[in-house]
Length: 131
Image (cartoon, rainbow, N blue to C red; front, side, top):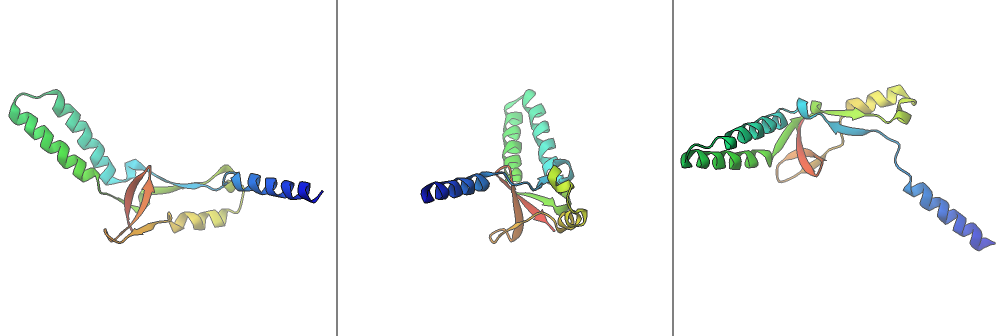
C-alpha cells in the first residue's frame, strides 16, 4: 500500500516537473538592431558581387569583402530596445500591472568579462546588448 502511494507521488512529481513553463519569452526584433540589418545588407551585396566576377582582381576583392563580413558578424551589438516581450496567452489573463513591470525591466542578461558587455544568447549566438 505504501509502495503504491510512493510510486504515485513520484509519478506526479515527474509529471509536474516535466510540464512546460507557462511564461512568455523575450524575443529579438532583427529589424530594430542596426548591426544585424547591416550584416544582412552586406550578405546581399556579396551575393550580387559574386555573380559578376570580371577578373582576378575582382575575385580577390570579393574574398576580402567576405572575410571582413565574417569578422563583422562575429561580434553583434544591439540596443536593448531591439528586444521585446511576447507574453503567453495564460499570462495575458493575469495581472496586467505585473506584466507591464516585467516588460519595462528588460530581458535577463549575462555578463561577459572579456568583452566588458552584457549579452543575451539568441539562436546559439551571443548578442551583446547596449544599455
